[in-house]
Length: 220
Length: 220
Image (tube, rainbow over all chains, first blue to last red):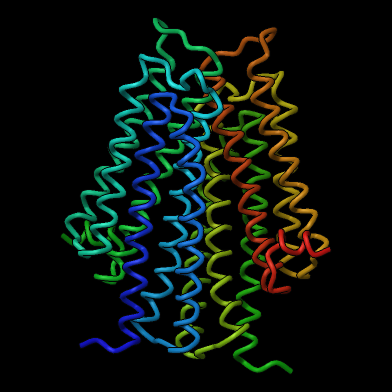
C-alpha cells in the first residue's frame, strides 16, 4: 500500500489527466462551433475554460504544498516540478481551444471557414483531438510508443498547417482578406495546441527515461 | 553579508535579467530584419536563439539543484518555482523573436511588410522592445509602478494588433493573400511576445505583494 505522500503525488497525475479530458472536450466542441457556425457551442467552450484554469490553479497549489511539506528530492522533486510545467501546457491548450471558439463567435452568423477549406480545418480538429487523447494516455500509462505517435501526429498537424496556407493562396479560389486572417489565426491555434501536447508527452518521456525524445530517437 | 545560498538565489535573478537582455536584442534585430528585408540580420537572430535556450536550461538546472540541496520553504520556495515559470516565458519570447526573423527570411529578397503597413509594424516592434526592457527593470527593481506600465504597454500592443487587421481590410489598399498571411502571423507573434512580458511582470508583482495585479488594482 502506498503512503499518504505518494497518494498525493498520484493525485497530481490524475488531475493532469482530468485536465486533458477537459481540454479534449474543449477542442472538439470548438471545432464543431467553428465548422457549423454554432454560437451556443462557441459560448459554452469560452465559458468552460474557467474550469481548466481553476484545475490548473488547484493543481499548482497542491504541488507547491507538497514541495513545502515533503521536501522531496531526486525523482519525486523532478515529477512535481515537471507537473507544474505540464499543467501550464494544458492550461494553454485550453486557451487555444477558447481562441478557436472566439473565432467562430466573431463571424457568427457567418462561418469563419469557407466551404472549400472545411475539410482541411476538420482534419486539423481531428488531429488535435487525437493528440490530446493520446496525451492523456501517455500520462496514465507512461507509454513511450504512444509518446512517439504524438510526435508523428504533430508532424501531420504541421503539414496540415502549411497545406492550408497553400490552399489560401490558390489563385483559382480567391479568398477575401478577412477569410485569410481568420483561417491563418485558427490554423496557428491548432498548430500551437499540437505543440503543447507534444511538450507534455516529451516531459513524460524525460521523467521515465531521463532522456529527451530526440536523444532517445538517436540512441535507438 | 548574504550567505552562499542567498547568493545562489540572487544569481537566478541575474540570469533572468540576462535573458531579458538577449530577448530584447533579438526582438529589436528581428524587427529590423523584417522591415529592411535584411537576410543577414534575420539569420543572426535565428542563430542567436540557441543562447537563450541554453541560458534557460542552465537556469532551470540551477533552480532544480537549489530545490534539491536547500529544501527551501515559504517565500524562497515560491521564488524558485516562479523563476522556473519566468524562464519559460522568456524562452518563449526568444522563440517569437525568431519567428519574426523567419518571416523576414521566408520572403527575402522581398519584404514581408508592404510600405503602407511599415509604420504599424515598426510601432509594434518599438512597443515590444519597451516591454522587454521594462520587464528587465521590474526583475531588477521589483518596481510595482513599472509593472503597471507594462500592463499599459500591453494594452497598446493589443490595440496595434487589432488596428493592423483593420488596415489589412482597407478596401482602398487591397493586399494580397500572401501579405495577409504574413502580416497576421507577425502581428500575432508581437502580441504574444507582449503577453509573456506581462506574465513575467505579474509574477514579480505576485512575489512582492502576494497578490495578483488584478486584485491589486481592485484594492487601490
